Image 1 (spheres, rainbow, N blue to C red):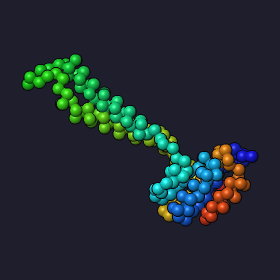
Image 2: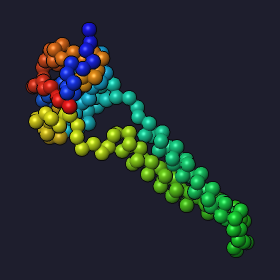
Image 3: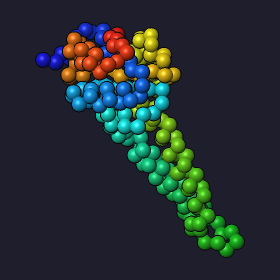
Image 4: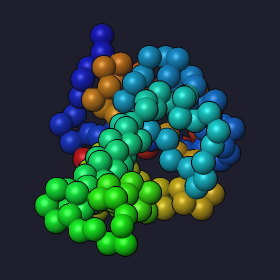
Length: 182
């Protein structure tokens, strides 16, 4: 029987590994055991780790595409409205709707809208800024940016049971398993 949260102040368990291969194998076994609320920490990207922990696609690329298309339409529409509808001026005998001249500014608004939406959606969807996270309570976690690899299982996972999860992580041959407080 799975327990949602054995202790009100417990965030989960974190295992420390010495190599990227050990972390990848452990992540695959944790995912295979049915754990869904996991996270991995590494000093560099590890190919296949996102699939191993069940990382799903985020919507940032879709938001950026939508904003870029909006920027294109807004820029082109603004130029069309100002040059053809609101303030038409015949300069040098050119047609009012000289669409070739509209391309550079429309391209710039496309990039502007896309770039701003990328930054803002990434910050919002990543939950940033986040000055505190329970994994910072592990004193050895400072090595995650240097040469150590960590795998955390949250207590909110439906499969989480403190004793069984600690025993399961111990079977993965970690350097250490630490309980993380909120």
